[in-house]
Image 1 (cartoon, rainbow, N blue to C red):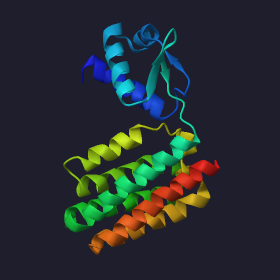
Image 2: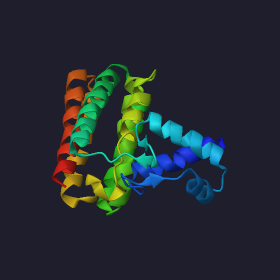
Image 3: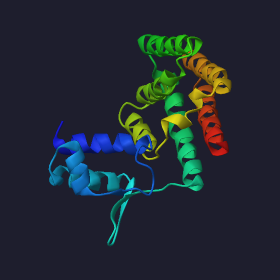
Image 4: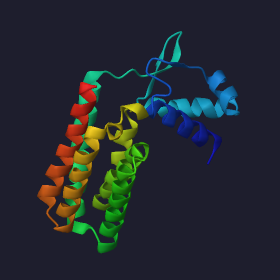
Length: 208
């Protein structure tokens, strides 16, 4: 990993998790000192984040983390529903027994963690579940696009619906139904179930 890649990955994670909240000014010198690199890779990383539309530049203010509002939240989950729904539909037509077994193992791990009260693990496991399906459905570029969409909107870890006891059961049931549709090679059902699942997550976020 180059120094610019390192700085980019750290800042991307901090912005996505809202450890650096919207509206925060990013000074290249301060970031360089904190991460132990020179200013040059920081500036390159900031340009990449600008291309991702996660930061913006203003005269006399420099780089600032974009503060995304409710309209952006609705658009984010709408785009996710379309992209990940399409990934599920395509995956239903091409998923192998090994890939389906891998998804079922991941789902079983989530069920075990939920039963043990390890809800803090479920958000990342769910992300992997969704992205694996997108990768299976669209190995050329759909999976990469699904990641780009997710990276475009910061989601604080504490905002995860997987931390809400009342949400864990219904979300795991949604994953189970998606798996059943994939196993049955029912693309229409897989797409509908995945899109509804994502939209319900968006509805939850908007109410919080």
